[in-house]
Length: 109
Image (tube, rainbow, N blue to C red; front, side, top):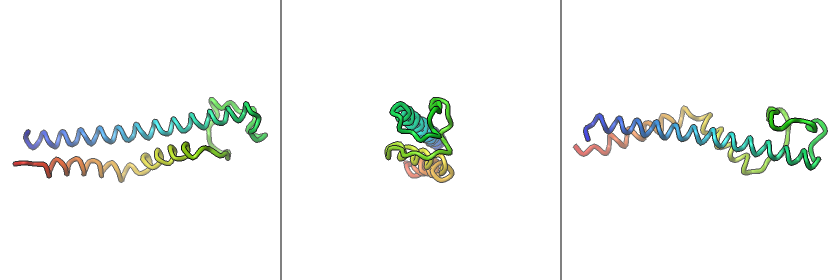
């Protein structure tokens, strides 16, 4: 395999890893929001919500500007998704540098 092909493959691998990372963050965020919506619907059915939250349509209501306790697993999903999305400027160049570095240092020639 010539030198150009190695770097093209390394760049494609880095793009794939970045796309998977962003997809993972998006999935975790959607999953956490769905869990919160389900938790709020269950609390509404049980009648344990605060008075100002009663009568809210939890399928369409924005999930901000109110305080409630969520499960630690949900908070962990949100934290991981936020980490991936907020610190992209750190991990994306790291992924590209790592993939291209591996391509450079595995040269047999």
